Image 1 (cartoon, rainbow, N blue to C red):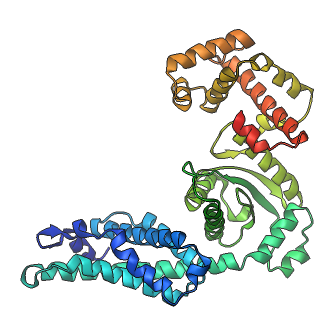
Image 2: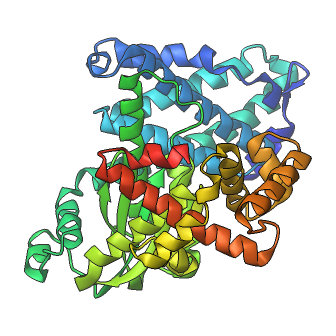
Image 3: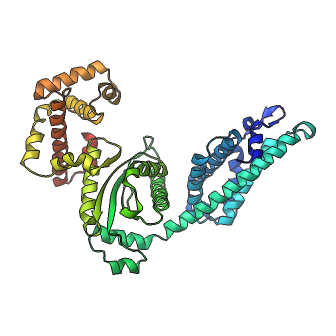
Length: 420
């Protein structure tokens, strides 16, 4: 980092550190709002409330970046947020020149605020050092703008690749068809099934939720293309995604980090599963990956699970006599929904009593009492390894069987999973 930036950390004006004089977002956002509203078509396409929130989010991200630079902190996180925010502006049709102007206006306003009361004799060195830091900040923001617009161009030009992904998933892709779309098929892929979990504070009006979901898809798509050097193929939905990543462009040991980066781009928790598949077996691989994802949903798992880690649960979810027999082990709990809920939570927390209590918002002694009742009613002790194994298997078989019944009756399997 340049010496001038290091000096700016200790700089003071009117007897106060510069870092303590950063303005609030509301002080700056009004100036940028005017740029987009006056003589712009944006308000006609974007609700004013959403526009105001987007401007405030971008200003907050830039202020966080400025604060990190002034204190010598890590700038990676605020820079990533700035890029994500600017990418949305690019998608809305804001030109790169207008985006540079908006960021420049904001940076100028912050600099003016920091130096407005500086005294010529006492604070001139602090003003110079702060100006040097803002030169460095402007360079970082210019790079972030260029990177964001480049990512938006990648996303906007991915329609042909999406057609290849759909054909692979349907088992209809051919090398000739892929070449016509500008895609070279790999011999084998890692198939990821990903589900984006709704934020806990999902209380937005329906049109706003639609906008947020659309933005999530674009952010995730851009992040995956960036991480996989544009080699990934995708089929994106509002709540789920299927990613096809050539095996020679991905290290499976880095899968957990990969999913964490997707979650960061989505700005929400995700659950994901992945399997390996040859180019001719993508359809089967997608079916298996999404089946594991469904099991994770029913077991209330989040994060990443490899197919091998849940292969037993997957097999138990297949129709058959063994599955029906295992599911019947929990029939005695039909009249005890609280005990069934406790068992589900206990197994979801890896049979950890204190975590189960926190998940259910009850005292640990209440958990102990309920687990003892489960052992008494079913004859299977959820505190012992053998009992845990059989109860877990029974729960998987039961949940899958319940989902099949709901589907046969025209029900919603997601609602069924939430009710379990």
